[in-house]
Length: 141
Image (tube, rainbow, N blue to C red; front, side, top):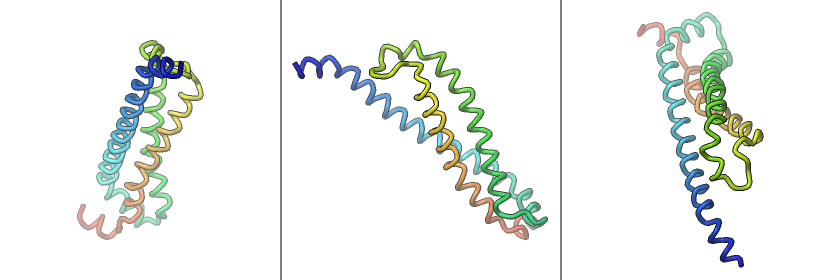
C-alpha cells in the first residue's frame, strides 16, 4: 500500500522539488541583482556621500540612506509581486499538495523572506558607502 501511495505522489513530489530548486535559484539571482543595483547606485552617489560625510553625517546615517534606498525597491517589488502571484494562482493550484494556492501565511512568509534577502543584499554596498573617505571622494569628482 505504501508503494501505491508513493507512486501516486511521486509526480507531485518531483514537481515540488523542482519548484523549490527554481525558487532557490530565483532568490539567489534576485539577491545578486539587488546587490548589483544598490552597489551601482551607491557608487554613483560617492560624491554626494563624500559631501554628507564632510558636512558631519555619521556612518550610521549613510548606512540608513543606502539601506533605505534598497528597501524602497524591495517593498515596491513585493507590493507588485504579491498581487501578480495571486493572479497566477490558478495555474499552480493543481500542482500544490498540502497547501492552498492562496495561503496567506505562505504569501506573507515569502514577502518577509524576500525583504530580508533584499536587506542582506543591500547591506554590503551600504557598509562600503560608510567607509567613503570624504577627501578622496571630493578630490576625484
